[in-house]
Image 1 (cartoon, helix red, strand yellow):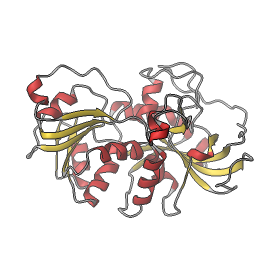
Image 2 (image 1 turned 90 degrees about the vertical axis):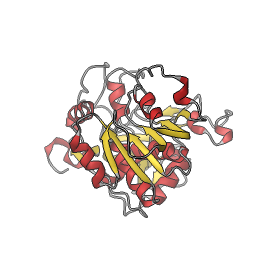
Image 3 (image 1 turned 30 degrees about the vertical axis):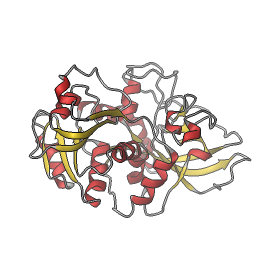
Length: 331
């Protein structure tokens, strides 16, 4: 499914099979999560080089490997995340902050991604997947989970967590937070009682609209929705010394707010991308929780429908393209 022009639907095309370079693996894709970042790309909020195959929550098996690939063999199951490659030489790479590398390449953004039957990826940035993590359920962990996990770790030991926007990331992180005995407060669009009920079913102790005040001040808030106006709202219910973490790659303008709402050593920060260490840590803890992603599956050729369901807020949990359904039948 190819994006030829932003703000236009993806187009189903047949293209040549990609060939792996010395450091790459060729992966036959079984599932690919559909992310809000994919939506930002299609809608023109982000402007990568086009044409492009989106998708960066990829699960599949290795079909071929370049001569320098040491850790994977044909038949191994791997996950391919957003972070596709880094330079390894810059100040960020050398200080365990490869997520900030100025020369990084990102899957489904600068290089073709997983809305396809096959893709190639740098083997050094792929993750081996435990057998107990099923294809459709593990796919959302590879971005919604990983970048959400990085944002979650930035909150330190916060016990009362507010999640603004209860989509794919929040439904994963709620399960981890409850496993670690933290309290979750879920903020949704005003009047979205269905999503509020969904949040409570996963262990949120309170759920309400984004204009509402929780029963207790928050120690930390993570902003998953790409709505800048949520930051001043979260500040008003954040205790002194608390932190707000913006987990998205794109957000609308943040309105001004009075300094008194920030005063008291409150902090606002963003999280950018992920590191391979984030992936290793989350994929190790996911089976222990266990994290159970709620997925809605789509055929590859229905990727535009999946994107629109995210755009309109009709989706609960995560959207995943199931490549076994390509063409409307089992392959």
